[in-house]
Length: 135
Image (cartoon, rainbow, N blue to C red; front, top):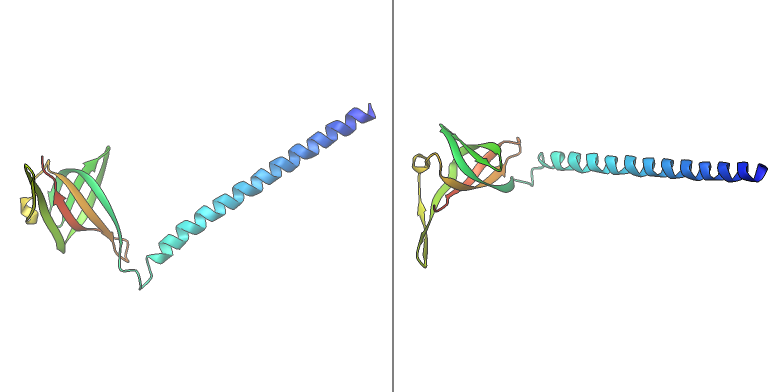
């Protein structure tokens, strides 16, 4: 009887140690995730970093003065157009490939576009470049 109790108590202690270890590991992981998010957000305030960049691909669904909205993979994204946004159209004619400069007014609803995105120090999302893709 005493031997069985000692074995059960030992197993219980081992299980408790395992649960405590896992909980400590989980807390450590959560702490690291929060720290990395905070570090990235704090980096936006750095005077050394001029902007962050990414790309977005989608179909133009709306245009308004200074903004363009695209939809892709079931999500909509609205991006600020600034005077220095470069807008071009990719042209494929057989083996020949070229690029044509466009104005914002040349972009049509339904056009498939690739937008080079920038994020400034105030966390504003803006279009660095827009490429209208061939149909």
